[in-house]
Length: 78
Image (cartoon, rainbow, N blue to C red; front, side):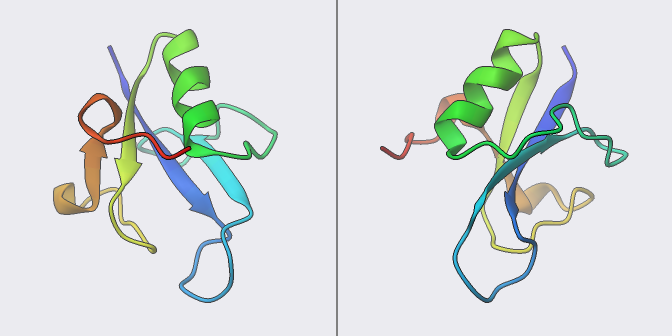
């Protein structure tokens, strides 16, 4: 299965997180809409057969493995 990245929006370290987007390695968005929580983004990715990765830093880089962790190993926020 292909990995997808759950990224916080807006990108940048200032201000609150408005939602999350699901993207592939090359930056293609899987969903045009902004998902309100990580939990919804993970569910959406799994529903489409992908393996979701969650960002561990506020400004993640897809090429840096330390910026990501598998969603099934992470505690899901409520």
